[in-house]
Amino acid sequence: MTKNTKIISLSGVSIFQQDNLVLSDVNLEIFEGDFIYLIGKTGSGKSSLLKVLYGELPFEKGIGMLSNFDLSKLKSAQLPLLRRELGIVFQDFQLLQDRSVCDNLVFVLKATGWKNQIEMDNRINEVLKMVNLSTKLHKLPFELSGGEQQRVAIARALLNKPAVILADEPTGNLDPQTSDDILKLLHQICLNGTAILMATHDYRILAKYPSKIIRCIGGKLVSHVSLNEFMEEVG
Image (cartoon, rainbow, N blue to C red; front, side):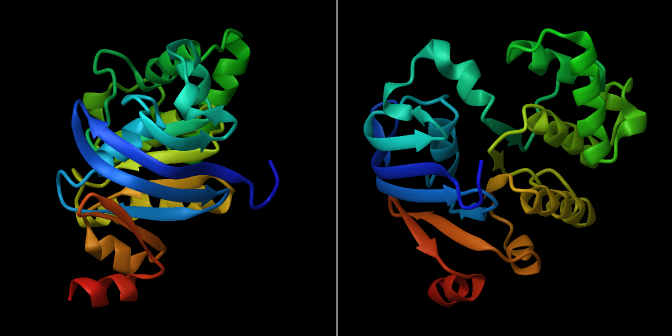
């Protein structure tokens, strides 16, 4: 992958929840190393957009590419391959509660086609080092703080060296200091070339860690160059 590689391209896309049109005429380009905030009120389409990108919702209208995958022609059998190109981070962590940190990560590696145990062990150690959790390998999720659980979720998202991380309100269940730590980590990951698309409603984060903003409003996706431009519009 070279610098300025386009990771996501959407053109004229309509996004549905069942039969309900949520967003129409969505146009979006995301390049290697981009950090983009996705904002909007509850129900405005943020999560639906992310779900279309990772194949949870069907792609029904428009042109869409994620890496080398044509989202309009995606088959269910291709989903594991698509999800090797991206990482997903959720608000509620979605860790397997009866498995250790290590076993949570092993589960994802096996689900995405890894077979060699030594290679899996090495990759798990690498990603846990990246999120400063090398000593938590054998802990169960309930033994970790909320911030540590989200770091495990980020480590899980990094396992397959994704081109992009889709983060859906990743700080929504965290206190401000822990949220700041998670944002610093995500921005550091972005500096290493991984694109980040992060849904959030926390304007404090937007102000403290400014980056490009796109907004779901009135059934449309609107781009804002800066936080100041956005704040001027919303008053």
